[in-house]
Amino acid sequence: MNNVNATEMDVKTVRKDFPILNQTIHRDRDLIYLDSGASSQRPTAVIQAMDDCYRQTYANVHRGIHYLSEQASWQYEQARRSVSKFINAGDEVEVVFTSGTTAALNLVARSWGDENISAGDEIVLTIFEHHSNIVPWQQLADRKGAAVRFAPIDSQGQLDFAAMKAMVSEKTKIIAVAAVSNVLGTIVPVKEVVKLAHSVGAIAVVDAAQSVPHEKTDVQQWNADFVAFSGHKMLGPSGIGVLWGKRDLLEAMPPFLGGGSMINDCTVAGFTPGELPAKFEAGTPPIVEAIGLGAAVAYLENHGIEAIGQHEKELVRLAYGRLEKIDGLTIAGPPADQRSGLVSFVIDGVSAQDIAVLLDQKGIAIRAGHHCAMPLHESLGFNSSCRASFYLYNTVQEVESFVDVLDHVVSRLR
Image 1 (tube, rainbow, N blue to C red):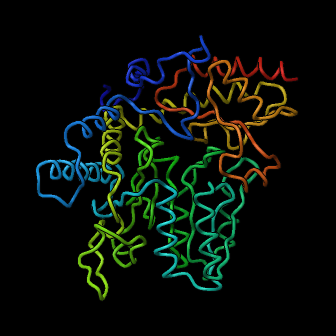
Image 2 (tube, one colour):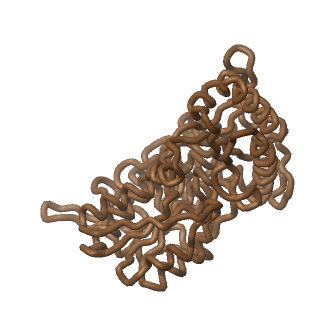
Image 3 (cartoon, helix red, strand yellow):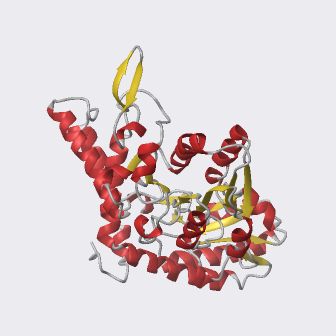
């Protein structure tokens, strides 16, 4: 593996670690996977770590005093320590395992939100949020009689920070933003948004599902109050996610789910919740999935998150430069040098779904649809778009092949 300080990706070596990529589909087409924005693939190290647990050390955690339970508990908590270090949490108890970003954001909305939001309060989002960072706040607003407001974007797809600042007031109690837009690739100035939230006494919640897998993340530098992300977008398994929160906030919040493991005591008269992070991890947790996430973190660290980010930027520049030469194609979002590792586009008179189907027939996997961001697409004036998203295992040759085939497909559809 590459040294953690490496500045260049050895993609040929990386690809050997991903067995799913080494196959042909539709009889004779080499698989080109350009849908990591939806879900990444998993290296052998992650698959092996999970398989080893099932074969050798699996048992329920934190409940048994026998050998297997102790081994599984140690591995589970070691994964928490790895994640904590990866995002530079102040304390590992601030890392709460959930089933994903969606569950983490819902936890904040249900626990912190139900305790602190009242009628007349306002929640500020951006228009490019994923539904998982919209619907929980809309539900909270409906329960409490609050209002949800959406900050717009400018002509280049960047957050209109001046407009957001103008709509923030003493009524604002939550500002929730994606660190990176899953459609536009827009990189949000998280620290500035956090400062804005705190200036009016609001909390700042960050959906980091599209940023943690691709760039160095320091939650203490961000100074946000809550940060959520998913394992399946960062080479880990599905069914595991993380809510990081400031310890004082988490300690003050009531537990959202009740059941086993989240208590210190339970009697016929009531219960007392457990300490962090147990009080937010009711029931049997995603044990093997957490262990898989720990292995994914180790894999990313071994290759160097900075090198991964630089590799993706090179692929985006290549894709952007070639895509903009296709007649009738419009790229949504910022310029190539101001975006993350994905490109979404629409083509005049051509269905996004038709493009995706024809690309798939050539072995190329992209995403077509609204990408769980319907308000954004409505604001942009179209119903759906195509998205190609890149990761550490994608090659220059794959990007070239993708654009070549796309150009041919567009000509055919026209």
